[in-house]
Length: 488
Image (cartoon, rainbow, N blue to C red; front, side, top):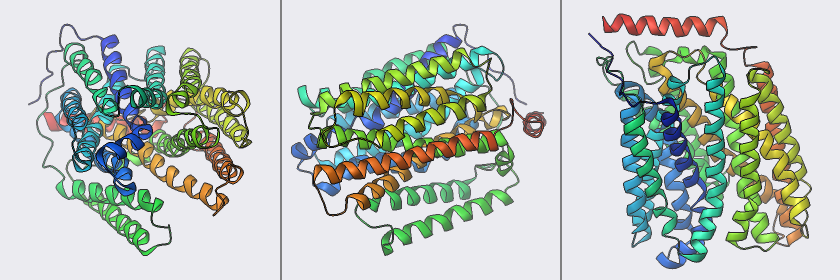
């Protein structure tokens, strides 16, 4: 028989929000903080181009490959417990990476960071969704704050990475994670409600876990290696075909599973879940690529250093924060799908503006103006789309639904970087002049604008009109009843 664990007397929604926001800051920061430090790392550790790329890929592989498993672990063993374990692992890996003596040490540390992030991301979203259930302005405000921290981490990663690399050395891009992780640990231990204790829900889905992890990892590996192997190369095609086979096997296993599958396929009949994940996939592809391409444009074409580049990204971060807070303030006036569609359309307009960048451009017209338009739009749609992804989901599946959102975002980022990078390369060709390089970046940004238009279409065509539709509400009730039945 299962009983409710006593909630900690000092548990507080505000402290919970602070804890999960810091977690999101940590994960988001680490996705970009290393990028501008790569030249310094390569010089200090005598790392070649292939090893440098693996400082990024090692994190992406373990993070993307283990997200579904991390979400299931959070549902099975407790959201708070997995959150604490992930923070400890992430902090230790960051400390070890800062003391790395060889490129192999740093690659291993980055891989372990990815494992920690795969636990952190779904567990923190599950805690947020459970603490602020659908209905009322509190959830909108909470996801608005979470979205703002997500944006702040992405932009601060470029700024902090540039400043630390230029003035105190690349090792501090790893050390900087440690105090953030410690503070988040303290907040989680003192302010997040204790996990509900439940009896084990059947045997662990080992086959599903192996197939999902292997399939996602191989898919990410095949895509990230397109910077050295073409999309049509035997190596890339073999990786993608093998990944598709493994993921098809995963779906078959989950379809036959009768007790506690890694992913209950019925969850994918929830229109909110499907629409939010499709939108998050395309948002991840466009936004991550935009950060990367504009960083290259500012440094390689306009000729600014890492620190100045980071400062130029601040308006983008502030715009996302402003958009997130605006969305939270008008959430009770406009539907979630209206906010997602309008925010995506506004972001698309900003990216289309980026499509007019020039080799002799200036900060105001080529960076600041489009940054403000795109970032405010992104802030408007980010919180609602993440909040929508867990609407109508039973409590014991919130971690899984959160991991789907995180997987979609991470997979989108990986696919987007590879695909839009290919667009830029095709347009540029063998011409390395500033004009040709700029034309390539502009074409990729215009393509990203098209992806955001697709997000707006998905919001209107797939998401339910308001809140969970009746089918998803029934699924949530059935899930709760099933859980209660198992616990009796």
